[in-house]
Length: 274
Image (cartoon, rainbow, N blue to C red; front, side):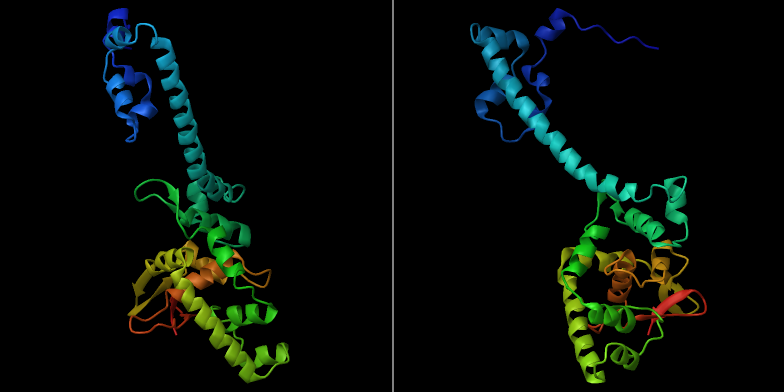
């Protein structure tokens, strides 16, 4: 192993003052007198501040410490959502690779897979705007009652639920016209969600997963993220399944239409537009 060269007193004397303070030196908002001091060598700095050298250095040290705290705080804020997304994988598989390629058999596994799909690694590691909590918050803001949830799951975003408008009207003891009107209003609200950054990002996520097979364009159920849509979804709203169903529904829009068509399962394991 090559030994590191020992820094001598002469070397230190010829080192720039700014090298002591990396965060301050990297700042683009330094005052001109500080930047001038940072360009001085230690020897030149000592000659300039014969009596006030330590006081000036302490001033720099205090500013450097403040910037270091700001930097670390920003790092923690950046990493926290990533750690949270990865934490959803705990207990679902032995490794992250296994968690990513596994089949979503329940909500816990589904949340792990969706969490991994929300981590963007194209440029730097970060959580995308379509984070699970981000989209769930958007859906919560719809403030759907049980009737609205049934329409969302059975008549709009659901895939092959086998439920008709008549069945929903009978279940909630309302007229077919009431069901139709409520459905139309909810479709309008869901379409408008494209203006929200979280759901716009969700739309892009699923639009990029369209595949071609046997003359059909659709979403492969062999895709772990798409397969989340097939998990039984009768619990509290909104769930990770509702988030995926919304993403798939938004991505089923034809180029010449504003309203998504929705999806149906085909025999070749594709979800295709109705």
